[in-house]
Amino acid sequence: MKILHVSVLCVLLVLMAVSGCSYVKQPNDKKMNKLLSGMPEYYANEAFGKRDFRFYVVQDGNNISTPEVPACLVTRFGTQQLSNDTYTPGSYAYDKYAAVARVYARFFNQTLLSLLKERQWDKCQADIPGV
Image (cartoon, rainbow, N blue to C red; front, top):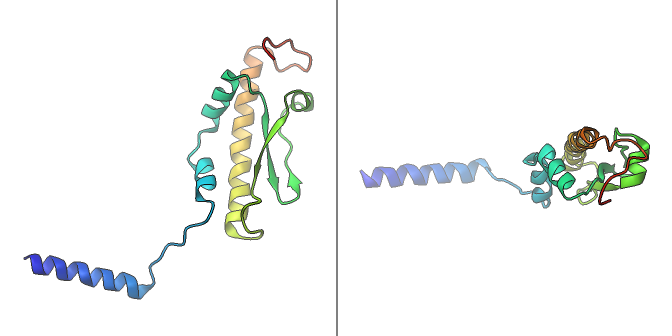
């Protein structure tokens, strides 16, 4: 019985090797996985608790996105950047990172803005304690 199991295992390994089954890991998988498995709403709440009111922008090559929040808040609090510049331009990973980053940034920024609105800190001249 053991010989049969070992034989089947050997055959499967040979088939995988012959069929060219391989996985080429992207050099920036951690960076991509952070966005894919991340929870932008959670991180926005965490940033808010730390009084870090910076909004996310996405740099895609030479293009930098504009957050969908009032411009005066972007000027007042600043931004932090998600960039696909470590990926090869024109590659699948390059375009995928930019696409995922735009969605991540949109949800992060919406959550942060809603937290500011709850306390009426979304006004351009709002008095925010500790800032």
